[in-house]
Length: 277
Image (cartoon, rainbow, N blue to C red; front, side, top):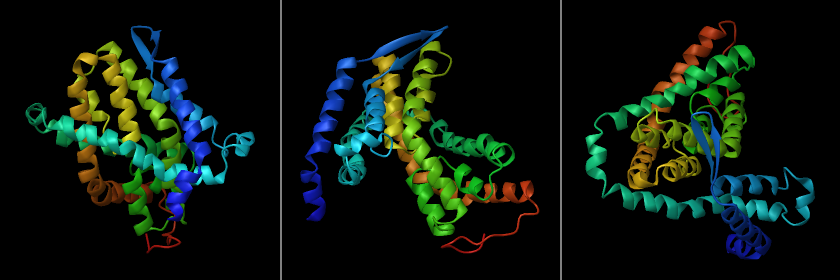
């Protein structure tokens, strides 16, 4: 009951969200030509940036309107708001299931791409940023909710591994949506990659990132919207289903092995809440 009272009592939050949506829709889709390609800026991007600026933890003066109560209510509301979008993906996958099956092993094997975070991020974390055990939690995955659960169970979130995964989770939440929408719109405009491959790449296991990515693709190629939504939704579903096991049994042991090789003198540490590493 207290949660329900908070939701209906935080009327300022609902008013601000409505104003953000109206402002973002009024701005509309904007396009900037960059060389041989173009970058699309979607209303979702504007809404995200405006919402970020209206966060009292970012802009202190806004705390008089958006206080801690509104922030507390807004966090779980994200999941509620994204559910209709996820449901839409489910209804779109069915009619295009033949095309999805025709993609063959590509849709399953693309999950190996999740290991790309290790190849790209681990060397930078260890040798450039000089990170310690934080690099393990930060680089073994894209650091969404399942990854946090794995680290919490294995090491505990109060240890350095927990610090690493939570830091990447926050950064991904703040900037992942923006990066995805801008990057994929440019790649779609230069027509280098197959649209199905880019749609599959949208499914990284994050509802907001998938929404931004597939939305940008659909705006760039509206005639293939159904295909984009179907492949993005299927990929995201597979990531949730298989990504956790890949992270737990392949990615995390691989990062641990790489860390021991990179820091042979580092002593085995014990997580603040978990077992021995």
